Image 1 (spheres, rainbow, N blue to C red):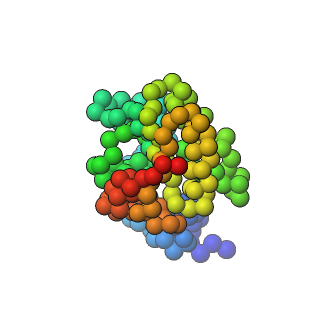
Image 2 (image 1 turned 135 degrees about the horizontal axis):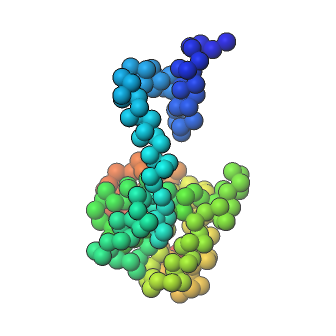
Length: 199
């Protein structure tokens, strides 16, 4: 038997699908929504739908965008010869906050993880290789998280790209091992970018 009435339980179950949200937090979020006016609830629902219908992947870097080509790739102030490869769009935001990196990005949308059934073909690696072949690239910076999967992905990419005569570097471990880029402070991320090393 449900602890609360069905619509509230169903909403809490939806919140529980979010990473890091447990039963108590999900129920708290559901009660918060319950306190919305009908207008606020519709605005909340519209915002949820909009992130699925109004966002696309940038044709160049695979980052989320509201246009075919994102503002970073479309800008003429960036160094398009340097590509920073990251796991997900949150890492792009984290690095951008440092204000230090002036190149462009490539978002993999995950890392190689045999335990989770994620193979290289499940990532945006083909799109990265296409960019490397079609553009003049001087350096690829691999900025995957310093986890076992992130390191394995970095090594895999290095083995693919290095034979093409392009410099492949890895961000320095100013980012703690096992940590996520999105939670690192701006100074740590800046130092990690500055202290990158060639793979």
